[in-house]
Image (tube, rainbow, N blue to C red):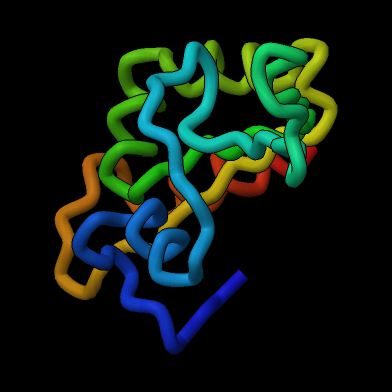
Length: 122
């Protein structure tokens, strides 16, 4: 997906973009992926009757810059991450690949990065 109105690497990244749109962002680190969505009850019961109920949606996003993709191809993390993203209960893994910035040095050649991107779609 190309979004010409969004800078490729905004300060604060995707979390900052989400916050700017009024989306609450929680900071915990994940075992797999960079982002996932949590559905939270709008009108939770008042204590002591209960707590806020949450449901983790089965969509997870792994975000990669071109340089990070190149490095993960070289050190083997790419295959391992693809494998973990495909494991249940994550039914909808998304690999979000950033276009390289103009003049950005690329560890592997651009055709190699494009082939890796095509392989993630399979």
